Amino acid sequence: MLKQTALFNVLEKRKVTVAQYHTLYRLKLKPEMTPAVMSKVRTLVPSIYINLGDCTLSDKGLKLIKEIDALFKPVKKLTNIELLGPNAQENIEAFIETFPGIKLPNNKYARGDTKGITENFMWFFQEYDFEWETVLLATDTYVEEFRKKNWEYMRTAMYFIRKNDKGVESSDLATYCELIDAGGIEEERTIKTNVV
Image 1 (spheres, rainbow, N blue to C red):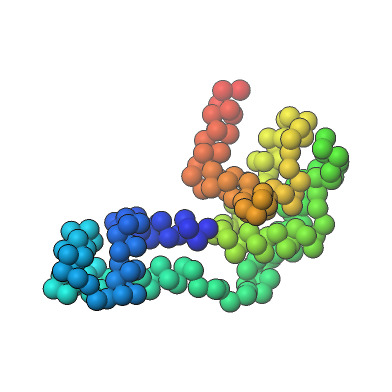
Image 2: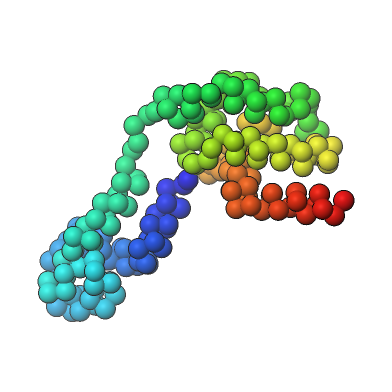
């Protein structure tokens, strides 16, 4: 999961807007306030996060700041097994085997090398929280979708996991995983099966 997404999820869960969080964070950095600013803070920020008398952070306000700060702290580098799981090699091989062993219409091989795929999965599992079962189902769905289109515009295995566009990294695999977790792809397959 992207860190920004996690931030917005926490704020939504706590029913705090970005502007309110910004105000709370500024209170943490500079607790002394003028009476006019204190009045404004009292009207803007939910009272459970500040001490109304002096507009300092309450225990819940401090806890919220710590929770969000933790999202952006560097995470210790995990080993392959910690990050990818004990059956990583088997799952990576199953992933690669799902892609056709051909050159795509864009003249690139659909499959990638195991080392490059493993590196991309290291990135993927640091950014997103999906199970291998979902990843493999999403991959199968993606490949099947493009098999029907004679592989036209299909991404390579490595690019499907991780795409870098002008410094912004994203993942089509994550999009397919989210659809599966939400039930969107399963429903679509069920509808097609029932109609045919």
